[in-house]
Image 1 (cartoon, one colour):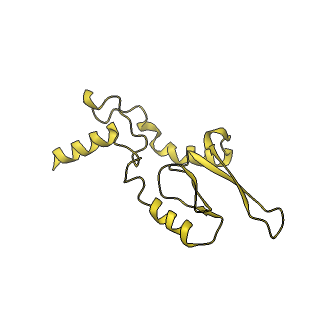
Image 2 (image 1 turned 60 degrees about the vertical axis):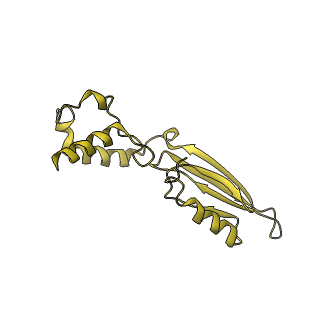
Image 3 (image 1 turned 30 degrees about the vertical axis):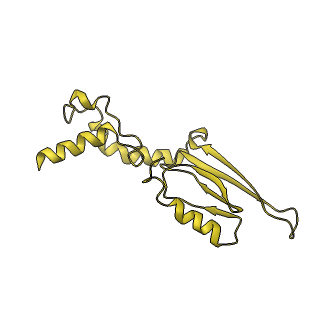
Length: 137
């Protein structure tokens, strides 16, 4: 992982060290984290809702330590919510006529055009757009 991706991990590690808590559920970083730091579990689901965290906290009794079970589950394993999907499709209907419209000829050095995970890595779509903006200025 690059240093840019890890920018919030030191803050989370400090929380794990400085507070007497069994679990820190954090976010903003764009990668999955599931580790234990000085007795505190630190978990993050990662970016773009690709994953969900299923977390079980269990105590045998009031005097026992908390047992933490974490499962990182890809969200694609869940069926879509029908009402939410209908809302998304309704919103997308406004631009549906553009789906097969050619807006620009993409130079071959940017093909295949890919815009996935822009927070994690450089991609061809971002490079193409930034180059076009630079040339326009």
